[in-house]
Image 1 (cartoon, helix red, strand yellow):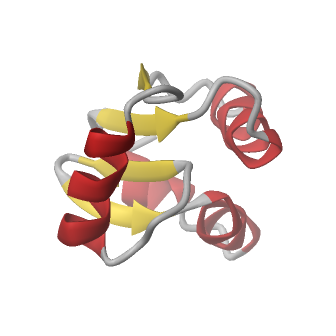
Image 2: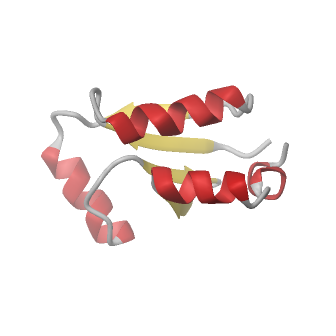
Image 3: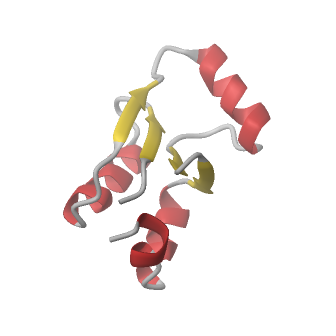
Length: 84
């Protein structure tokens, strides 16, 4: 199974939705809560070009945020992306 890393804010509804979808599909992930870490968010924005959360990485590759995750799910790409 792939290594999944998700950067989140504690009360972000999109972060909650993304984690719920991963959990529902038995995809293990490591969560990094950056709620009060503006420097980390700026660092991620430089790396990914995205200044919002969640930011989801699979095996070190940025796959996007919540909407991107749901698109992968709808297109039945989870087995390919997550190795499930």
